[in-house]
Image 1 (cartoon, one colour):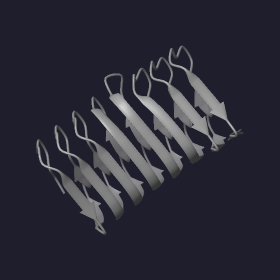
Image 2 (cartoon, helix red, strand yellow; image 1 turned 180 degrees about the vertical axis):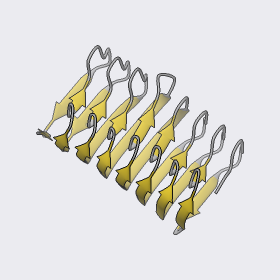
Image 3 (tube, one colour; image 1 turned 90 degrees about the horizontal axis):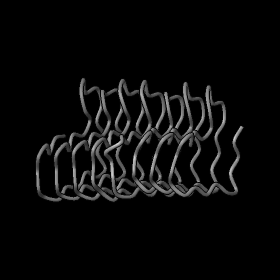
Length: 185
């Protein structure tokens, strides 16, 4: 599904996307709002790609599995993102990817990320992130990589297990951090 460069609002609901060699959903450079709910994306390149977009995003009850790149690519966005009930499994790159030019805010609630390079990659990102009830298991790298990030982070009621590197990497981060009622092993 592609809405590349679109300015309208999109809803993808109760949809199954299998075996796409590139993106399952491509909304790069879009300015409209995107809602994805009750959807499954399996065996794709990037599952959801919203690079360079400015519209809002709501993801609810989405299952992403067997991805050869990022499950969710939000490089260079300026948006407010809401994730709820997201399940990410078996991803060659990152579960959720923000870069140093991604701005806005992200709320990540009731989400499971397993068998990825990094659960959430936000190195150098100025994005403000609130995480509640996140489970990250089996990473090659970090559960959350927010090294050198400038955005504020609030992580609560979350669990990080079987990290090959750090549960939470906030090295040289300049944002305000709160981590509470969480397990980091």
